[in-house]
Image 1 (spheres, one colour):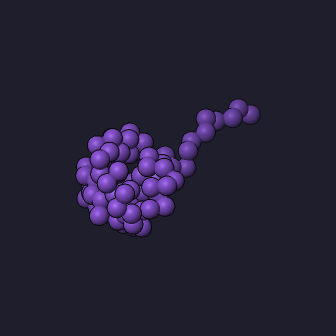
Image 2 (cartoon, one colour):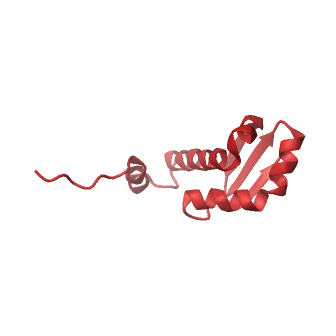
Length: 97
């Protein structure tokens, strides 16, 4: 018996769950949140109190003014890196509060 090519579970979910459904939007929010945490690193993730993603805008509530200024100064690079991880330009704006 020949083994078939493996498929990632995320690819299966993307194929069968419509992105406009509630579950599809929730999965996208989780992917965006994960990409943000991967890009900014552990220290900035610890300083991030809340992430909200809606209609292409990622809002990040930052507990430290030092991290907020650092992240704001590197906003374009962070945005580009997040979209590279996601594989398309999903996040259009990044707002730090």
